[in-house]
Structure formats: C-alpha cells, structure tokens
Image 1 (tube, rainbow, N blue to C red):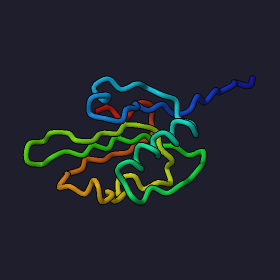
Image 2 (image 1 turned 45 degrees about the vertical axis):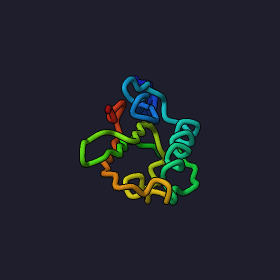
Image 3 (image 1 turned 90 degrees about the horizontal axis):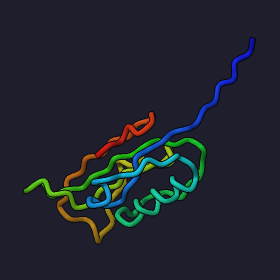
Length: 113
C-alpha cells in the first residue's frame, strides 16, 4: 500500500519593526516572502545579495542599544538560505553603536521574538 505524504513547506514569524514584532504573523515561505525580507534587510545593510532560490530559513534579527537594551530595529521573516543574514554589514546611515542578536532556524515558526 502506498502512502501519500504532503510537504507543506516552512512557516516563519514575520514582522519588520519592534512595534510590529509585538504581534508577528506566521507566513508561508516562498519567493514573495523571502523577497520581502530581503527588502527589509536592504533598508539596514549595504551588502544584501540579490538572489532567488527554493531553499528558505527563518530569521530573527534584532538590533538594540547596549546601554539600555532598547530595541531599535527588529526583523523576523523567511529568507533565502544563501544570504548570510547574521553577517551582513550595516550601511553608513545605520552604523551606530548597535548591538545585534541574530539567529536562524529551519522548522515552522522557530523564530519568535
């Protein structure tokens, strides 16, 4: 007897600011959601590669002021696994003395705030 297995793909929490990340949504990872995350990353970083693919991961990236632990930027989302998201350089506009917490993962909704 044959069994049919259905793979539904990866779901990641998604938001693009400390305020929106208070209530992130869960979204299916596909080219559209990965492109949205890439656009968010480009607002802060100078070296986000332009890429397309079918391999995705979830991201939790937070920048904060180390003096008082106040979050200044936060991105949760689905991204192309070929992008080194935790090693991107901040652009000149955002090269403040921010501290960073960055993690990636590969199972559903593994990137909570």
